[in-house]
Image 1: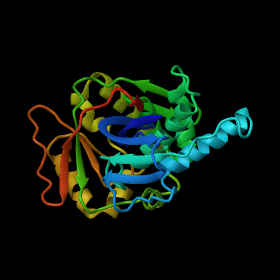
Image 2: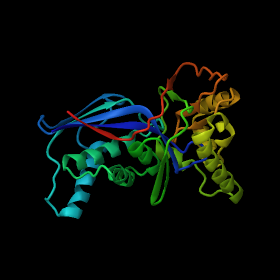
Image 3: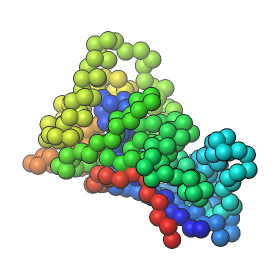
Image 4: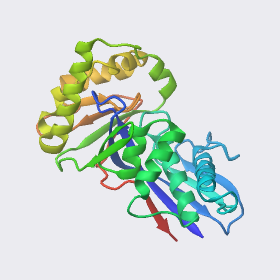
Length: 295
């Protein structure tokens, strides 16, 4: 059997929606498993020279967790993922705040269930979302990767929405600068004032409304008081570019934990030139989440 999981990049938080909002982007990784090929792991594309080939990668780990969970539900030995070859084609930059780990976790869970012929098309994406979030730790990214579109996720529920067709994302991705999620999270203050909490609740709701109905008025809606200042302080180059994008009149936020910046185009407003060391990617929204393609 030969299967390919195609999973989108994701931008989480979207400014004020800290740990709650996610957006799927049409920049996809593909992970192919082949049960008839010689077992082994290979990579191409982003991070190809640094990702492990000993089975400790996120896709393989997620497949093993899914297999264990299935065994708990159906009895040990009832279902076992066969030996296989895994090949990853990576287009999502690593450690840049674009959900590469969540994409791998969603892919691994999805592939395991499909190899064992246990997926239910009506509910499987949601199953993959929660198990991948448990494995990888970030349900906001996992939700958008599994379901596509704009997602709102809380402790035990998720809502998927279709953004306005006028939403036009631009990614500003640094070539060399990386920021681990753990480092970015440690920089965030442990407590916030009630005023700041209320500010973010209101602006997160407004961000969702504008993404659905009025993207030209996103800029002020996406203001945040919980996490972005602390994260931008870790990467002065990203902070400088963030301020330049704001000055140009475009909505902008830190994508996930950064250092990638996510902006949205507006007619009559030109994004600034970030200079050397940055990639500017105009990436469409992606309505669908993880897909399984059979060879």
